Length: 478
Image 1 (cartoon, one colour):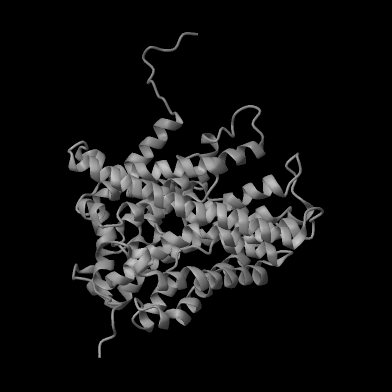
Image 2 (spheres, rainbow, N blue to C red):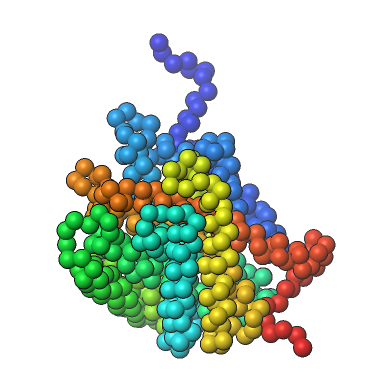
């Protein structure tokens, strides 16, 4: 039967729906963005996440991740569906992290990583070790995995602080009024550096599981595990990424300067150069299997090593605009993708256990470490700043990224040729996926609401009357 010529030509395709949702949300959010971000100090990540939840399968079902992953196609198994979903999520996370970290590197003052190496080394050395071990201990005691090595792997995923969620305390009105500039720079540098340095902690646990775990049947034991960790993880993944990021960023800076002085570059290409550099570093590091996250941050910092590029672009809004679009998009996706069924049905833990774990991690993962070290960090002037910086160490995109790095390792090195995991790690992937996603969700909500709620608590009704907000975290008044 021929179609009715008078029928309304509805095209309810995935592309039309997702572009309508994304465009509509960004447009509506943009209309009140200044009010929400600069007056009420709301995080765009939290708002996007909540909208993603409301429009995803748990809500109105306008955003359908399973449909985009071809899960409804004939012959696609549940395992293939999950693999497709994972591929979309990890690559989306890689893209956002790469662009965000190059931009973060560009934001730092000239030669910052060299000039401030002492406090930065303290934060990414003892500080990260402390956060890793404290989180892993909490996971082991509360979630109860069969081995402490499993807890070390889960804890490593949430050890880095997220640079995207940290934006609320390093950008905008709240940061300008309440956070000293030197502390803002330190937070940017720490979040950019420790995002890439999550690799050694994660692979230390994974290699030990492979070579000395309960199900290890071959290999050289502890010696081989530590040897692979030192040679491959540190020398190839970490040091090579630092060298590569430095070289690419430096060459990019020199070429851009040479071409700009000869008027070879138009303004649009000049402004978008950092984003293009992020894509190049992200792709090439992915090709050779090194630490793309750390390389992007180092490349961004090398690009503005002499402050020239930063000063030339700081008054333009192209980079922040691209950054905002990517951030909003990825948290919309996270809200729609969020594995709610795992939080309730997962055999390795329960919902009550997850809530107790989340509260414990948010309070004890970072706060005691920073508070104990703040005497040796000159940018942290007093206990109030130490408490604030210790509490505000959000878990976000980088943790999601490390979920899939872990799952990929389990599939490639801890499973047989049919994809069946070793008996001692059959629940490891489920533990990491469930625990880390739930910690991300709680961190986005808690850290996204902590500043507005804290500000209103200090200011009371004056916050709603449009009066200037100031809850200073500088030196305490005499």
